[in-house]
Image (tube, rainbow, N blue to C red; front, side):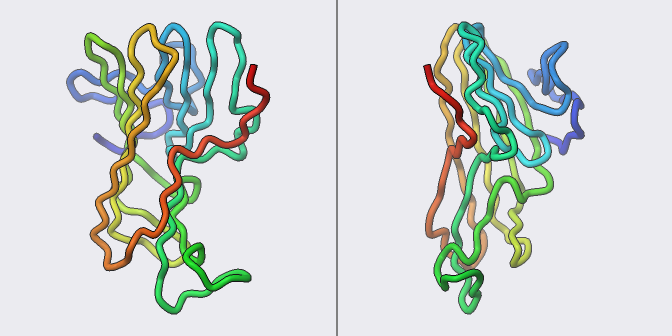
Length: 171
């Protein structure tokens, strides 16, 4: 996959444009007849979850959009009020770029969001992260899966994924 600017389309075989025709160019979209998920193409944050039958958008506050957090303790690093593993976290909303690819087969669609390295306030680290969203045709259920390749000397203590935030009223 290649790094994409907002609204850019993938050129690889079998790939789909990031957004469907008429959709907002600032989001990568994957959808079925029943549900639509939106991802911020810069950070990879999950910014939308729409029930297409009811018209209800579940992510009511996009400023709280997230996808993941990894807590990775760094020896000797103390921030905030506590000297604990949360003193260094890799947050999706702090990442400045990701690569997004969409694929379609005869069963449905897949969106793959990749980060070749992760950055935090403490610097950039050789931790590769990718997640996939699988959405079968005719389904209102998406499957999300996370993969981490930690090539750093540090241990990933906790993983929060998927992190859907800003959720409004559920019918």
